[in-house]
Image (cartoon, rainbow, N blue to C red):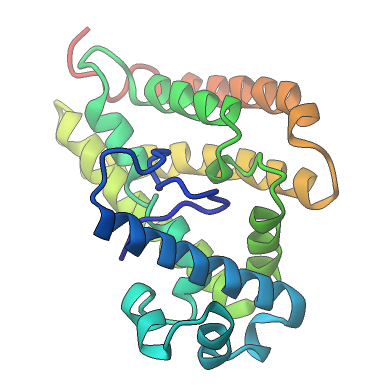
Length: 232
């Protein structure tokens, strides 16, 4: 799948604006973004179950086959960009310095993402991002995949990375730690989403969101300590 970010204004999922990309790749990403924006607008207006892929294709001025070339299923039109972040917590831990505990690495990453108003933190008042959140909450098939599939994949990836940094090589500890860390992030993100869907401005909520992140990760750190640090 061509990588796009929820709420993107043309940048990639990694925040790049396409600089350095070949013309063909830029055009592919532009097409993916157009299809995604069209789908979200139609879903927000009429409901996920009331819009067909054929209607999305027509509105985006592409063929139905082109839609499926970029998004494997109708659900992927909503969840695909979000699911590109499944491995992000694991990547953060993997790339952390050996003496940095997992909770410290993920805390720093989450705070930086908040400050950037990254939609993955829930702290984004872009209308398309809010539309996606509301769609997930209102559509059982999307909610199930978002909260079961995404969570399971992220936990599995993070626990594998934590186990690789665990000198005791204890799978149970790795799984419990992954659940605690991801639970911390999810709780913070859900509160940010609640504020955004209630109509609050992201810039106004940011100080509270940062304070909440500091408090939540501090609570997690009391239990996890320096777990994930392979060298002290």
